[in-house]
Length: 303
Image 1: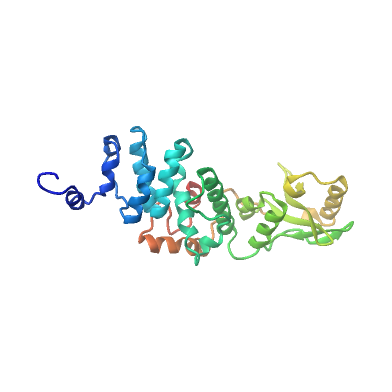
Image 2: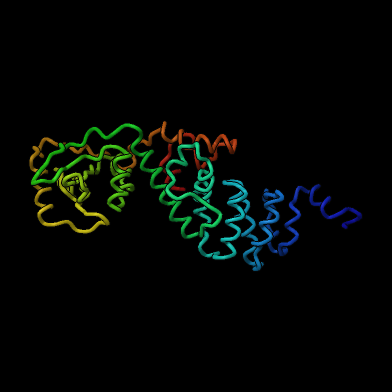
């Protein structure tokens, strides 16, 4: 009782969750943010309260932020991870992790389609960071390239010495090659959008042998084979390097203009951007300044 009023009534009048009474006073040194308070949340959060008074304020604020950005289940999860490994929880990464956690539960959205490994309450922070980063890479690839395939490859597909040189012109083809060859090709969206690279698959009898990157090397204005790697970025044979050079020089290189764009001048695809984030804006009933309606490289890189 407090002045004849039950504590639960006083908490309700102040719009404060009653579970806060279990926290050390140090946790309430700052203005109290909006906090989840469902019956399920109250039962779950009791298992993840911070023992350290020093940790308590940041624990409470982080919990509130993730609850707002994602949902209550993610807030319980981040509360647990903060108690387990506080040094692994980087506040600068919370927006990306929260977006990934939210879209993990939205199966009918485009954002969910791009998730390789979804968020679950059992996942640990290191795994979550890796999965969220992979998701962001796929987002970057899509908004850099858009729906239309790359049409200005410069070079032509051909077979040389029994090797097939095939262009990778679509997001699907690039992602499929990256998965099959276990390489970082999905990170090439920015380079491809600025015409700094064109990527190819080298195959023999239908089997993928290598991924090839054609670009201008240093001050050389003519196309070069700058990367040629087997699965897992392993080295390829001398024979395959020679075939790649022969294929390249089938073309009149002096007539090929890579038309490289200055960095940061290629616009992101607006339709792809809106399709991706619209479900989140509608669900949260707001468009945050860190996730604007206009496609933004600054916003993308800031996640």
